[in-house]
Image (cartoon, rainbow, N blue to C red; front, side, top):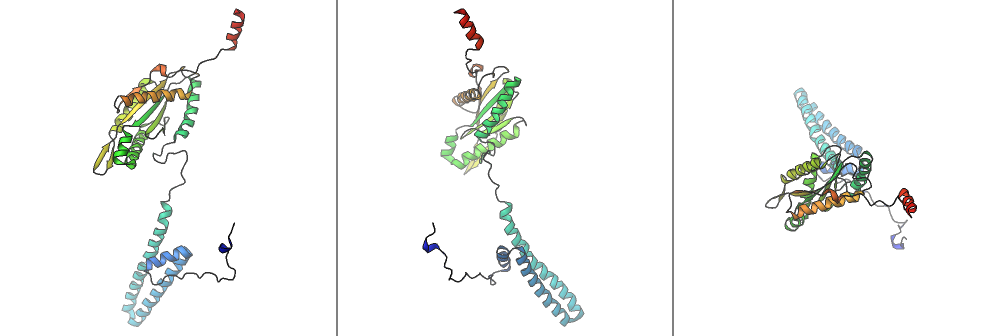
Length: 295
């Protein structure tokens, strides 16, 4: 609700328009004109200046004769160039913030790493999981974690620790196939989904990602920090994923990552095949009928 003190007074005089600050340098003057009146106002201001300069130059040329007329034309061209440069500069200054303005953030993308968020990745994995189950294809899930992330944060700060995760995400994304999926999975974790990948291929991919991560360094005050990563791998073979939820694959990969963490980091560990099991199957109609027949 509007208070009486905030209501405009109709009897009050309208605010005065601020005149252009003519005592300022020419580039700033043109920039003021651009902001208040647009490009056409600034162009009109510049053309009036150029016209006045040309008039003075031609008048001086007439007084000085033929030879002076030539020098007058040269002087007029130089004046036009000198007066036109500030307009280009002012246009560049006004257009630069718009050109570098950040786009509207995508909620499906992690702002730090640029890869999909965990929610967006899990939505993709649900579709891939269903597709692999129908076609009986092997799939693999890799969980990568920056080693000693908390220690890096405490020693060098959150910015350097986040830079380590960002560099790792960039390196991993450049290595993957077009059919592979990547996303941020936790504070210091990335998840990689490999369709049509058996255990050997998944372990090779995991070790390749680990080696690439070990080559990365993050610059900090007074030096650089080398990045290492631990990788947990979980694989489902054809037929094994029938009835198994996606959460079982995720839990198996998390268990493998925990084993790699306990081993000291900078290594790859795979979940045992028994770690991912189909959901328990309830009694079918045939089983119930057989039980009633036995009784």
